Amino acid sequence: MCSLLLKEKLFINEVVLGTAFGIIIGPQCAGIFDPRSWITESNAITLEVMRIVLATGLFIIGVELPRSYMWQHAKGLAIMVVPTMATGWVIVAGVLRALFPGLSYISCLGISACLTPTDPIICAAIVGGKFAIDHVPLDMRNILSAESAVNDGLAYPFLTIIIFLVVDSSPKIAMGHWVLVGWIYQVIMGVMIGAILGFVFSCIMKISEKHGFLNRESYVAQYLALATFTAGVISTLGSDELLGAFAAGLAISWDGDFHARTEDEVFSSVIDFILNCACFIYIGAWLPFQSFNTPELGITPGRLMVLFLGILVLRRIPSVLVLYKWIPEIKTWREALFSGHFGKYMGVGAVYISTLALHKLPVPHNPPESQADLLALTLQPIVSFVVLGSIIIHGLSIPFFSLGKTVHSRTLSPAATLISSQRPEPDWKHWTSPIPMLPVPHDIESGAASDQVSSQQTRRDTIPPSQIAREFVENTVESFANRLNTCSIVNVILQDVIEGVSSKDGPPVDMKGVHFSAPQ
Picture 1 (spheres, rainbow, N blue to C red):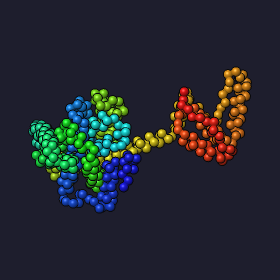
Picture 2: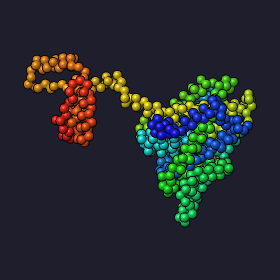
Picture 3: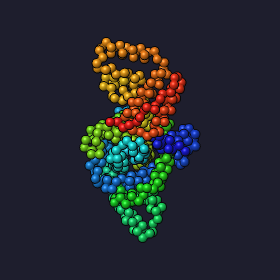
Picture 4: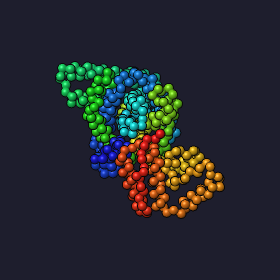
């Protein structure tokens, strides 16, 4: 009912609103909607909900990227994805190890792997908003979207190596499983299957449309159908369905034809918006607030807050500021800071990877008897708290920035006044001088000039305020009249303003002699 006000004026997106609404109707407040009470194993439902939303979002990103984008911008993407993910993975694990000494560094790397992917859903909500379209360059918006899709799928290898190290009997066996299963079978095979499916469906749709077998409504509906089908096929085979869905979106629009035919349709945007709202309402109701304070596991609100602040500062910004000179799409350090801040949002992807990790890990004992048990018990509380903080900070960054910019534009600080007083006054300040100061001719002696200035100062102190206002308006009109070439309606408006001011004290100001002409 008020989406235009919230999204276009206040720049508050569906991520923040959906999460807040989910918390309100969830078990912590109203108790109307509680996903954890539906079945004994609620993680299965959470996993599938996140899977569908992520696959659809990644498929749409792949379709909407410009033609051959991944090939043309491979260098910038490789630098943004691989070093920043690896660096952030190790740094966040170090912060976790310092704050939660009960966890081994391997377990900390497992939790950090869940926080490594950049969330494509929050990314699409931020870089696709009105504020980003007006203020963020197109190259940066595209590369942030592409990066969020790529590193969301590449979180699999970061997670699987830790699971294999925890579950397998020796590091040698774990490394073998990681290469064969984590990389070749899951990542590479998932990308190949997704690309093949996307290319095949692209050819089939062109043939069907050429022979008149496919109407426009069905053509646009392929957004949801193909994304769900691709994710279902690849996940059934046990490969990386997220990278597969993204590859399918790239392949189906490899020549730009699919995107050109569907870019003016609102159906895909409506589907994406509905899925995002439903997903974040689910997350808001799913958040385990009672687990944020479990001292027996070493989890306290203070430690979680310090962890979140450390992730906010250290996970991505330093590496992007160091590497941005080798990324062609990022031109300045300000753009690097922007991409470093808004590129570390954690949301649906983190919830999905953490839930997937719980499926891979053995069922934990409570109290924990091993490092695997402790990892399984602490994984979701830590990840969900960071996700909540990321939704609040990154979702409200643009509204606060816009508010601060508006306040700054309307408020003149003392420091700005001091600085401006030390600079030469611009010409426009003389056009609107509150008291018209008569110019002193060059042939008047200094004594006469000082008498005239003194007389003007005495006049300033004695004339009534209404006369000051009247002379201010008259002087402003006469000054701008010699510099503006405007239409006759301005004469009427200015005459009404002057008559309104002068009617309170004294006769109205005569404007018959005022003529508007272009500046010389």
